[in-house]
Image 1 (cartoon, rainbow, N blue to C red):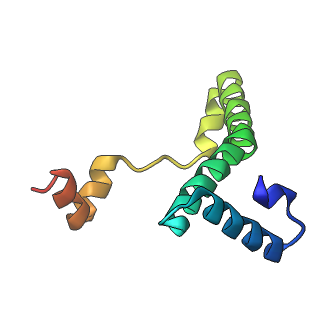
Image 2 (cartoon, rainbow, N blue to C red):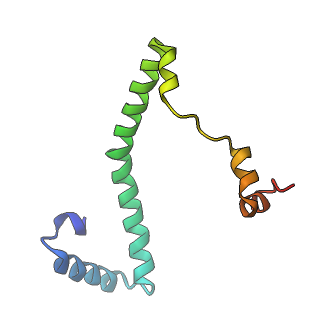
Length: 97
């Protein structure tokens, strides 16, 4: 709410400092980052994610109508292939040989 209702960056900083003082937070920076992260995730879900899902649905419908349309898209590498090529990842995931 602070970012949405503030006129400029200085007001944002001032109001955040006031909030920190009011709440008595000891680790203000970490606490604010946690709240900002949640707010940004909610905004992402409400805006960007809906657009991504709409594009995916459109592509799926096109492929259902014409399965040959699938050939226009590059296949995704299988995870097994990626793991074999990255020894550090393979070690971390238990896929090393």
